[in-house]
Image (cartoon, rainbow, N blue to C red; front, top):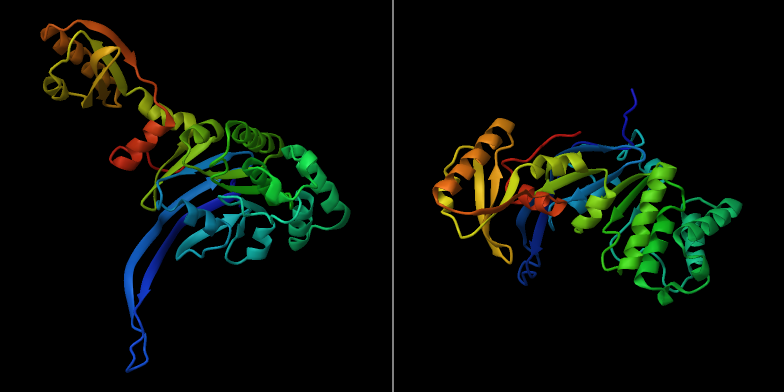
Length: 346
């Protein structure tokens, strides 16, 4: 039975071994090797991405994002587990898989700077067996789609960073692949260029049914673009849920209280159902953030008990609001502590 996913990882694991070479021994002529350390880059990661879906893979530097992308594209071989693209095993059908994916790496050196955008597309198209009339028509269509038609005959070295990034996306799409892997697609771009690239990614996903994987440190971009989010920590996937669902897990657990003066937080922290309190003090006056249990009954009791405790302390309650969570807050919670992480593939 075929998989519902265009890209699928099943219990993929990858360990790297770093080695340090000492200077050659003059007497023996041998160069001692010292194994410096072992890095478990990816720890039994499983997830899938459907056609017409944008999947965001988020994590700190060194968490395993790039290694995961390289295993999907066939650049790195996993130690165990399997990676499939369009139901094809990447390790066994590498050439066929390469025709089905387009990769945009971080930075702007994907293209050849002395050539024009049109010449770049001709060069990379021929390398990937796209030729003749099909190549010419597709090149012009892509440049028009991404907004580079007026730059098609200008050397890439004269283009802006945003224009180079747009060209990199065109190069990745020259074979019309169903799968697109984007590594930090908007890093270092101005607002207009970033907006244009995000709009094009959404357009080709929704209208052309592309399967897109995005890795990024920009939580705003991830929240705006991605249908689902996977958060990776120390090589392990600690969350994998639809974006709105992931935000909802934490949205109803935080409440902001504003008072006439600072309360005794120790007594509030000890209340049943209270998971944590954090003092705040700004132009809105003194107050605190209350984090409650996810259980509805426990959360209700915690709020009632907190109000009672504030009243017993003789404090004037000015406002109490439910704090809306964003992806950055969720990311920090999940990567700082794994205790409450919503695991699993959905």
